[in-house]
Length: 266
Image (tube, rainbow, N blue to C red; front, side):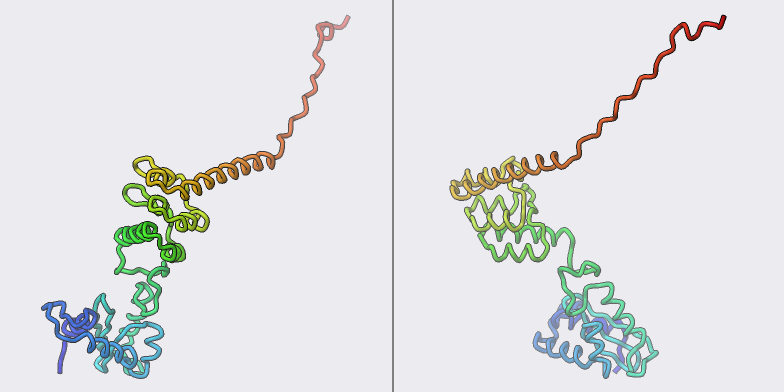
């Protein structure tokens, strides 16, 4: 059976697309068959080099003695490379090198961290779309009173003071919905600003007053007073710690010459 690089790439893309051909958009394979085929490709698709390939590259692949390689990146794309020079294990030398460079640049290894691998590119993530979705999830967690979800967002490195288009933060929503535990977590653990205002000029304290959240109003008021006292104390300590400016000693005045000194000698 003969195949070109283009046809093998379509096969790989079909495996990456869950059995749906990207050219005809027809479902040609069942999801269970896709799972089994990719498992075999991952475990033994590169002959005796399969274990090392899974460790270094972490992608399902199948090589042939003709120099061809089929690489599958699930839910992303399928690739076919062809380069006849083989290594001693029967795999394409340049094909293996290409796969190594691919996972070095892109976040495609099976066990690459999708959130914290900042040194790699990930074409699956769109900058503004991802940021917008993160803000929505953060605000929804605060509005629903889910402290565990807020803790997960914080551990993932998210800025807990992010706001939506209207300038409303997670603290705004937690205060408006009456979730005292969320308010305490955001202020005590995340150190978010307590007086940040939205586009209408409302702070979290104003939201709590509007919706009659008595406990949150009391907590935010006490928190605000405590912060003011600590700021004043820090300012006074910084002033006291500054060394006093050393005054320069007064300069001695030189005696002025009298008119008699300038008179000519007799």
